[in-house]
Length: 117
Image 1 (cartoon, rainbow, N blue to C red):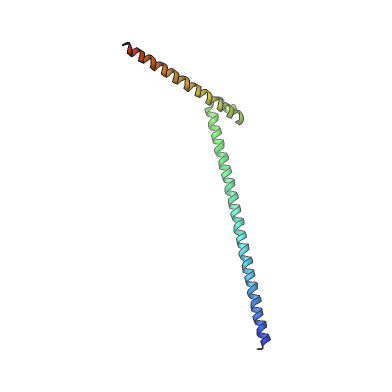
Image 2: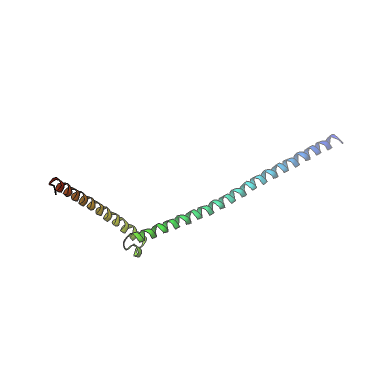
């Protein structure tokens, strides 16, 4: 074997090694890209499921409000929220009135006990 032939063999080996390395790198990038695509699909499916779960939960809560708020079954969502706010305010007023009455009655009972009744 001559010097030129050895040089050609060495050059061929180097070229083949570079081709393999390039092919390996390309395959690795392609594999990584495929994994990223699969993960993005999984994330999208999970996101869709989460959105669906949130919508179902919201629907359940709206139905519960419609049952709780007087006349709520016939109201749309916007009207239901307005009516809910009004209903809460009305309940708060009732609670205050009951507290005032309770304090008044307790005061009367204390007065009765002072006079021996």
